[in-house]
Image (cartoon, rainbow, N blue to C red):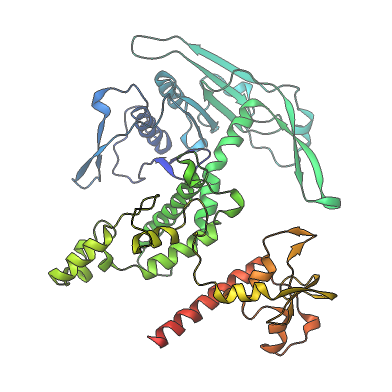
Length: 461
């Protein structure tokens, strides 16, 4: 698979199975896959030939599907891969296209004639011989190839990864220069912070600064925790693909929030949903969704839709096709204008936030007393008190207006059960042992209150 360095959704893929026919000269699995991916990328570069505007995908069982090939690159990109995809023939093939490649090199795939001049034997950690044989600059090999009528000119490079290891980096059209320098690394905070330096060169930095995109994707796929125990082994690739789709969808959400696609979509980084909150929202949408809504392609084939009467289908189709624009329509206060005001635009929350009659009464009763008490939400000292609830609540943060977070949180349904008074009244515990809830505890309590509210609504119905 091919991922952009700054993104988490794939640009190209190749299914790995034994039915693929490997091209001549690319008998190994990794180089054969690289051959396919290089051609796939070349077909997505601006200035491609017309015969590459469409492509077919064969499932190796006799069926093929034709797809439209979109242009996504203005010029040939740079590719970073591990040693499974290395090989001198891979570099030559990519160089003739004009692609840049940086790849760690296996010890059995060294460029011809270079193996005696580079480290190629395994070195144990802390080996004294390896420490003695450090050199001041990385070993570099360069080969320049001129252009022909059908291929482009390119420059092949081979660089030692570091002076004490057997790892090497091969590349094409990737390094204008290479030299030894030190990169500072740090871990920890405050008195526990430690700083050290690591040996570095341009080839190694290029590889480490780009290949992490694949590692990050793997980490997010594992965090998605999409899986269940089953004997049906074919469920495993499906669940892996589903987790990858969730990671890609979250990255698309982040890209929209950055505002580069549309400035109206911009959301500050601190206000965006985390990956965990995003997955929880997807779960809610999945559990609440029904094919009866016919909001997604393919719903018309589900039994829940086909069994409906003609009148029910027409009614659902009419309601699902209602579009909401950014501006209001003329005609004063109407159902359509109210729906638009209730929808979130650039903000996470909509303009209209429901009935605030009771909230206004509580805000009007806030008074500053002569004494100080402990805030019911954060546990800090405050002299402001809600006259109706008779509870101390923070209004300012260090004499600065902070939006009245504590004041509004205490009167929010989602905070019920975790305030200082609730600690004693509901849980029968001492107030002196109460601690202000963390963000994680507040989110967990909000989900629990949401379930309770849904149960209450069902009882009333």
